[in-house]
Image (cartoon, rainbow over all chains, first blue to last red):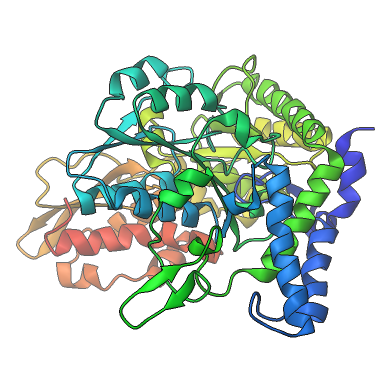
Length: 405
Length: 126
């Protein structure tokens, strides 16, 4: 049985009719749809157990705390983290990257260097730009090769004794490139740099094991992996987290407060000021449970098959250009493409008229668009609920596009 | 067959395929360029003013069918008018010519050329 045959009935939204056609949702890289178990877990939480966490000495408060902290334990196992203290719950990947840029760059000296790459999402560019401006750091970028891979020779040339941070994406949200995280981290470490990995496009599709990746920090967003919006995961190697000064204050992140000073709380709460996203943590647990039940290996295999099918189908169409590494290279579950003579927004609007939801535009990766020499692309992305006949439908519809506008 | 008619009027399709004002404008006296941060669309509008009157207009850029059609219609509407009158052209005037039911998410495609026009007439943005 193919995976979508098991999963499709679990996603209520897939019953929708859009513009007179059954919804074909190919935009999971922007945000995935949610299975019923996630929706119901959050709804049940609000209906039965909601209270603030950690210091509410009453039954509901204890239940809410248990559910919230339970999400941390679940994530710890899901990503192979050494301990629960290494799992900080944030508001999303962007939030986690901002937190890291603020905290890691706070102690740097003018002229120190931060290295990113040409294939980053804006959320892994702008926080470093802001920090670089504040601290007068040099921000440099590893280029992307013509075949959509990270230029590792250039990485070696760019790494120097001044490189303090190397921040890069695990999987490109446009090219689908899967970067060699362990390799990049090993080289960065030899140069004495801290490594930050944006896992937003990886966590939904790949089995993760923090002990194998070799990075210092890893961030991702549950809403792209069948979970809710508004919550994020920041994993940090314990000694790295211990060494970080918090940059955001509030309740919960302290042990003791005086008017002129405070003692920080233990990990991981030191980095979780204020009331956290509790219902979202409940939804996150349900999402991880759902993925684990399917098995991440099987999830990845299903999505890779869909990606190969889409790549082959689209690349064979006259006037259609697909971006990223060749199909022979293992890729993430996204296919960016351009249709000659049509603007990506028109491609998306025309596909939407057929019930097909794809993303179009710069995908929050303008520097990469500049590198590719395009204003934007259309992008189809896949998840556990997508079926091969949906990919066929996409390819058939794209084939007709050039004749209609 | 894709139901394009619901999305793109004949006017938009015609202006997208054969824009009348697309291209560089030699001797332009007022130029501005702007982007739509949502999609990265870029429109550069060039005007030649003879005193206060716009005597010629042209545009270039990377833009979708709606934005291109909007820029083309706007150029047509402002040529021959005094700058003060050109400033008064509003989104409603463009929509009336485009004859399309534009969704809220695409309205910025219609209005980008208008904000570029305002910048050009204010002498900035080029």
